[in-house]
Image 1: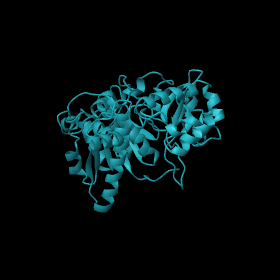
Image 2 (image 1 turned 120 degrees about the vertical axis):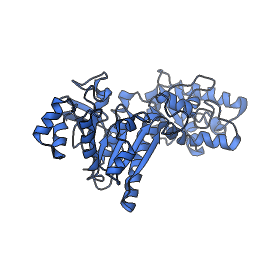
Image 3 (image 1 turned 180 degrees about the horizontal axis):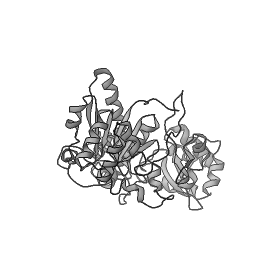
Image 4 (image 1 turned 45 degrees about the vertical axis):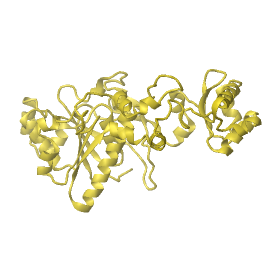
Length: 392
């Protein structure tokens, strides 16, 4: 069992995708995560199709190893419960628009007053300041502003949406987890907590190192689909095969390009790894024709012993059954007490002295409300009073 964060308690106010994924990673590493959900609908992703039985499969993939508590933070009693919970927590993570937690009275300043060691992370699209801070937006908008969407296209084509929510997950979930862990380490040294402001747009922009290097060096943005790693050279691109499938060729180093050309039976192309001008288009067409000579699986077989960085483009249903994915434990089945047998994505980091396991299945809505209140020393009479007042 991974217990690196054992003893760390996280109060999770997030919902949808970026925050819940972040807190699940922390929970997978041993943190106790108490997911606070409102008393009206809970985390919206619970109800999105497709469902297992009661909960969405999206929700079930992002919320294992957590407890769920229903709590109405708009009531004075609900806020008092939250204060008591926060006083015993190490981390608070919220994903509301800027200003909402201040209106609720659960902002960082309020929490710091009762717990100076608290690490408080706000995860938003544009951050807590700047001219866009109050704007509504989604992943498509963040990657548009950050320049990623403008770089994601075939040459001469329109921008194409990536197949994963880069801003939400890489710019949000991972950056928030990194900031929280750094703040916890800092607290070990000083005893003081701190505020962590994570903006998904900032996170995406920080990932654009190759394109930004080109811009800062030349003064011009890379041409759409024209960069070394975005389809601008024949040795690094995606090619269609005879059966309408695709192969990914990533032969950036001369030895890999040479090995590919030799295995494909075209040694005359070895000298043309990085052609320019009209020759670039000629080589590209030649490579396109070469790949059309065989099916995708025939290419996989013929290149099985060739170290050329040429691999199949798998459909997602093929990826989850891939032998390497299975060997690394990245897909597994979990028996859920309500939802039955559900499929899960494995924890992506491996540690030398411990193995990942699921301590808690994804929680039902409010499943641990009374348990959490009892642990905060509320009496049965008080808990019943909360029910009567719809605080929980």
